[in-house]
Length: 299
Image 1 (tube, rainbow, N blue to C red):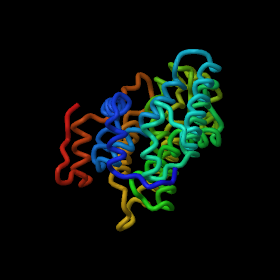
Image 2 (spheres, helix red, strand yellow):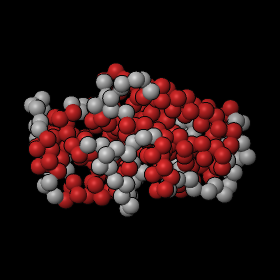
Image 3 (spheres, rainbow, N blue to C red):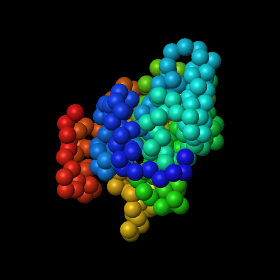
Image 4 (cartoon, rainbow, N blue to C red):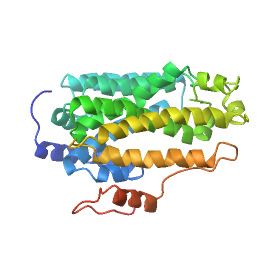
């Protein structure tokens, strides 16, 4: 899989039909849509396919069926990814082949994402040790970041460092935003060390989310997340560093979410926090990311 790939080849792969059309349709409904739209076409197509893969394995991890059923489906994906890197394509992995060659995407990062999904599929995660939460974030978020920074064209050293910090920041922001949704799935990602420091001894999601000290625990975790955002911003602020337009927008969006969560507080009922299209357009303008020919499309 080390042969050079051309723009035309990626376009042909993209034009083959339903899988890629489905990928873009899914991304268009996601919070990453505007960030992806600012990329050049070849990079955007590659990111759509990475996102499609992530959504597919995430749907397995969150799907119905027994843990054994979900793990078997993820193992099937693992086999298909290994086969892809050995030159044997399946219908669901073929759209990834051209981006893998074009941008040097690594097998280990795709497999790490599957490893992270297996953590969700095997059992409901409840108040994990901080080290386990960090491993989970590295697999489900930072591995995606490591794939992404290659597509963005960042230098390897800075790209890997950015994926480390920004991936953790985005994932923990998601965790803090989705406390109630995750509790509905019997999951609680708040680390037990932070719960204990806030004098919360429970690990059942409902009990933790109704505890009067929940805000202390969440604010503590948010402080860790701010540190990762700050480290990511320092990396992206380096003069002349290429490939940072899209991650800069993603960081702006999620930092805004984190600050609004902190301003809202954690006492029930917790009003959902998101980013509206008008706010997202404003961020694009403020960050100077709308360049010639880029249109903001309402979806």
